[in-house]
Image (cartoon, rainbow, N blue to C red):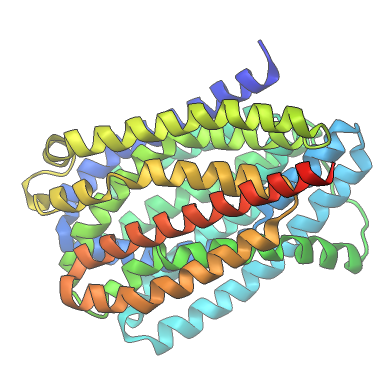
Length: 415
């Protein structure tokens, strides 16, 4: 069995657990907490997700690429230096993120009453620091991801059923959710040292700065992209009741779980494509091959959501979330669109060294999104948020495809 196929299977097992555990906890929490309680949790988690983006800082792509190159050369010293630099950088970013959260929960009214929930979420941020998915992907040792995430999700599942018994158990629900990421991080870092994948080493501050500087364009890309995804939940809090946020977030959660089918392919194939970048014709051949497969998967997910959205909502969420049906139906084209963005953006522009251009596309797209999302949400509520996201995602994907194809054509002419 090839390393690539093995990695896809291992990451597929991770995604299987990502489906299995939410399919058990999601219906339980939706029925216990109801739309309002679910909305409170979703709003607090949206802020935690933003802080996680700051902590990750694009390392999941930039560090994966650097470690993949070092691993290809069997340069363990370089892997150790990258590992140490990223871990130190993420620790610094953790402290900055926690300070930012304290400010936000004391200044923005929507988060003042959610302050305890947000602080509980700090547990998951610590786990985010310790979970080096970029190291596992770069060295193509996916077993560590499987072990750490499966153990963590199982414990989180047990804690959820033990602690969450009534609609007022919001703190317990947030704790159970955050505990999963924390345990993942602890198990993963133990696995790293036990398997001797990397170790801490003495490095210069200049090296840490260089790592952060290289990852900065990707960080900007992820933050910009979050403006038309995660930020929608926060913007909704200014215009609609918390119950409506719960309806929207439930549909978005189901869409995200379905969409995560593409993650094993996305994560396993990215470093494989990186290894072919010096043989450009081979890189393009494999990009076309794997890109066709990925888009086919994304298209099937979109069609499945469109056709099955009503029974999915009834089965998983219950009658309290009947309004989520229309929201999920409108969101159904997103998985197909996003697979194209992965192909032309991450697999394409990042791998050919055009991360800055990808970053600019995201920034322009996020700016465009802000121009219309407040208007659409004000007048159309949660459906306005979905319409704006669809428009922005389609616009950005078109820009990525156009830019990538132009860069490829330019390189071929220069050969």
